[in-house]
Length: 94
Image (cartoon, rainbow, N blue to C red; front, side, top):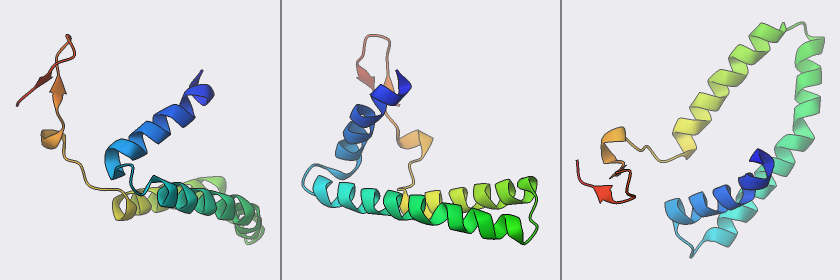
């Protein structure tokens, strides 16, 4: 169910965050980055393992990269800016 829900959720999220006028450019950029990272990651992981990094060191660096890229490329959304929805589905003002 989670894999099947991924495409509709991602497409809806992108449309809400960036609008529909540039959705093709966004999809092509993300797809290109995904293909490039999928092609390069076995090489990078192999080199890092060959030079003697442990799994814990590798995971630490990967988590650091994840958080750096998240804050560089994703818009900053503060919790106070998010709408609050009641149980009836109506948006309430904070």
